[in-house]
Length: 452
Image (cartoon, rainbow, N blue to C red):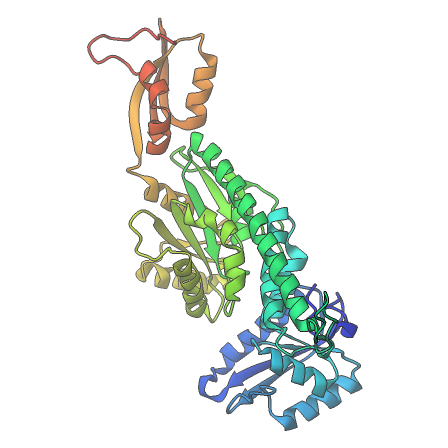
């Protein structure tokens, strides 16, 4: 998808052999456990697009070299390894500049892709909806535009001028940049149409306005697995980074009987390209509109605090900072099943002491009832309980009440069915004109139903 290298090298192909380089600044060197985790994440990114990892090397950098990032001695050793193992692709697990990319490709005689480029490749391979593909293409073009600064030799040639004046004409780099800018403008216009369509869908949902609960979290924290377990859906789930790109929504009943819309969203990751966040803003609007945000955290990750900070920063970039005046926030530690059984109680107790009330396993179902109960608690105080009378003939009305309210009890009488029912305040406000027709009269024993 992304021509991050000269055109004759081609793009990233599935099952292509790749060498992974993980640079660490000497000033930021982590403990061995963190280094191993970051290395595993880099491997996970490569495997997410079916690349065959030949070897992984960590390299500590005193000071990044402006021209190539990495020192010459290391590059010479790397070039020898690439040639001996017939590897034509190198992944640098860091964002690198166009000049660094160009110089590395010249020196290594191989295609070089950085963290931003690989994430874009993954998104391009995974996006399945029209909107998702538009967002990925917009982000990729924004990335490519930055790579046109003398990064490709074929862009140095010029084309002849037009008209009678002649002159040096328009250089290939100027032409390519102009074409990319024009396409970006068209894509933004297309995404604006998609955004308006999404707004219409949201308005139609608001006619039967269930509260929205959005699952957010670092990629591969288990959001989609939790989503499937809670909803009975069959969303794509795999132990891969960015297994979910396109938002999925399903209706879920809480223990109280209240219904909510549960939304599964794209996972976040450290060093996520800013233009990628911007491109996916339309998708993430489901999070912006949510009443409750459930932050799913990976209990077995040694970097859970760093990952939490990444998620909170992205939410802040979207304009959602906590504590929030209107949104409820729930933290969930997932994957308790991956901890040895004799340590689970201790881990759970420790988290409870920290104020974390939800510890779950999307595999075994452990803690899911507690999570649903916690969501229920967050939405309490937003419901209105009342008594309604509906005639026996009004089957459609009864169906509407069951669909939109929580029926606590009902009994039959001569004039109809008496409902003891609660409504979410949004449902109540939207359906007020209907509901008041069925409200029991406080002065009389019952009020006859009069449908206009």
